Length: 231
Image 1 (cartoon, helix red, strand yellow):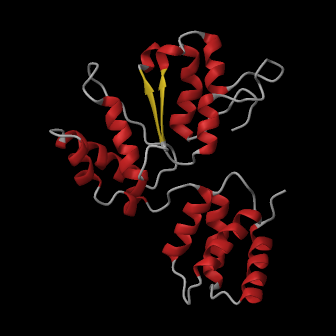
Image 2 (cartoon, helix red, strand yellow):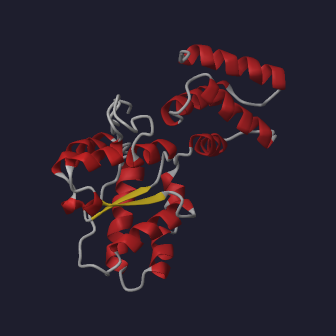
Image 3 (tube, one colour):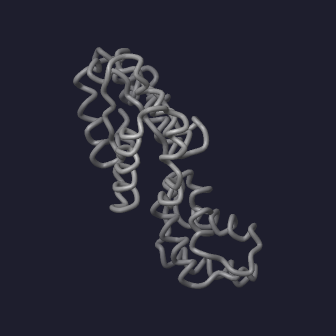
């Protein structure tokens, strides 16, 4: 069970005194807050202790907010400082994609507005349209490469393969009691393992209509339920 913030804060303060780590009270509160908000696969106090240990390993005489953010990003597999992550985005993308400066600027402006200006937690949703071969999928791959340094944070689903109702289970998992229900779905498993990333739905117009309801919640709330009810 998750401990309250106040109890977790007390634990970290005791660890600070024991280890002589120069963390201020407000920094410890920030560790607890960010751990609760961004590290969702484990609960307090374990998540906060992992972040504390990451900071302690830095062996600094003075810690900054940026150090805490880096520790949270490392332990949670998330991005908090999107402004820093987006620095140089247009220049890097223009080197990879020739002759699409206007489109790349629109992509950058959308990412900056959503992630930096308004700090929205819901996913940034974009629709790339055009005939086959113009580079829609490759653009998505390059965005992942520029933002995350590799394509491990990129996944592609060809929605033409999910045209019937039964195939939806492949994405979000089979209901309890059905064969394969313990394995989960390809989409929900990937989202659980990657807190930040680029998900591309190719030929989405060919998907079964039953997939649009869970997808709409994902777009609006940043959450999706698998067939067993796990979010």
